[in-house]
Image: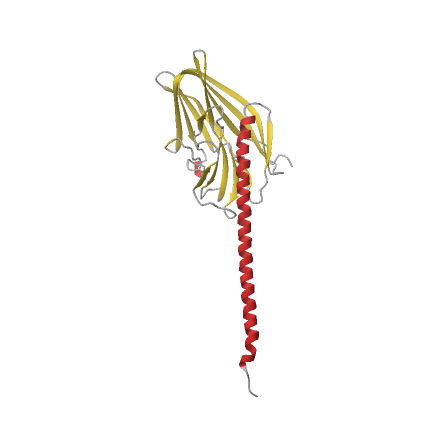
Length: 281
């Protein structure tokens, strides 16, 4: 009997075409799923940048009134909130203050340590590239002048590697507000600094609760210059001058800023603020 090989060609062709279509559909589905996940993570991060800016503003509302409380909620599928450092006595940022009365400098407030608030997005979910930086509020200096100046620096940063993992982050970092006033012939220079302290962290909800704990005042007379220095006790863990991108003078791994003015009364107000994560369920 004569065999006709061409008779099986349509069947083979159908199998090949069907297999090719299935492969293309699977590739398209994988691409669509990756794109959808990336878009959701991007929207998640963008939304919570606004949440962190709101948190920075709320710190100013509670820092100067003991007992005042504000709770801010957020929603995130991929990211999470962290208070650094919640378990250690060492905080990631420390300010010190020196004044000049006459010809010499005098250290008056040597250590004002504060925690920072971070919204962490894993780089496996969303990344903008190592060393990415976006200043979301303020000019980047840790000392700003004027009644509308913020007391928190808020910025988005991706800095790798760090000991606690690889994240694209939004940071809320306490900074200093400076106000200059004159009453009669007397000049006053006022400085305001909130210090973030560890509160109760129950993890029951996606929220942060800020509570004013204390307000301390330091007063000095006949001051002609003030110098603030920012240092980083947790630099070995990656929270160094590269993580805190202040636009101030940098030397030996620390930032400094100096303000000069006519002989004035200097007042420093330090507000203690407790930070509680997920307190309300």
